[in-house]
Image (cartoon, rainbow, N blue to C red; front, side):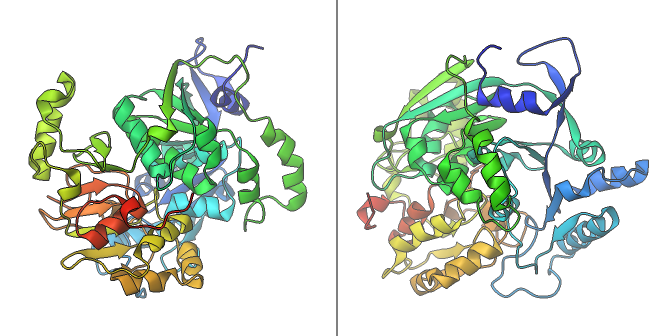
Length: 476
């Protein structure tokens, strides 16, 4: 057999049958899906379709439902959500779980949280598995050597009914990140640097695999951040070969494999790597030592620069990017030549499936300890799950945030997207640890600057975008 990439190996292992007479990228197979996670926003139509066709869910135990998109993250939870429409979505979601035998974590469940935070912390994401879900950031699971991808509502229905999906094979793209990240530079900065380099459509149609010293240096949470945001350069799948850090992360999780099963799985998982001599359709190189803290200036994740940069003059950009840049600057209320460090903010937000894990909160707390949020800035932190929230409180991180002037909120998607009561007002400018800075993403007329949690904390203290390395006592 010819040498294969990690992506090709996993897809081959899960192929039920071929659906055409082609081979390679673009060929279609019927793919077995190991697990899925459902949320209250993208699943209702799928359940309605099952009811209309009088179908059951084929394997209910392979699905888990989590309320995360529309719920409030107000500090004190209890009782119905004030938004009537959101409450109806939550109630219908719970009904679907009861009717189809699927376990659901509602907003009062101690395991509730953002779906892409909850599944890994439960131990439900295992190397070599395939996970499809109704959210584009399902790519997060590539940090475990699992193929994860987002699907639409009709696909959710098909998956629930059959545990399979028709699937078109992707082209492959290798991102090699050599060297070690500098002190004060994070996984978020790395993936933002990649997105800037290849563009918002640079990985369209590709399964993206990361390798190199900088990737091996990262903990599993940092790897999840990178795989999560890989969809922002168009990747449908993001992957990293699993290693001992992944195996240790999975061990002992509430729903992970038993010690005996873990020992049996270890040699199988260790073989989950791209073969020597395997050919990728595209190769990209990043020098880790050259990466600096990143921030966005526009309305797309690729419209970004290092914190020492300036707002660009659209005419200096490639022709295809000029019109989008001009529109972005008009929306963002920025003028070319302005130093990014001089951009003042109204809001600061730490949260989302990209950057709301325990390590992210620790990074931000190191910056905030002994400091206060600048006058006129409203700052919020929404832990990625109720479990993360409890763990952070056990370490006293909640007191660091509260003493600094942050609101310590409950878990949920929160201000990542304007689908709940955590939104920006028109014209408000926010330093945000989220994944998308599209027009209106955080609220109609809201202006979003993406960055790492530590950079958000630094901006909150300074009152403007700033280099976290000027404030934090960072560790090598």
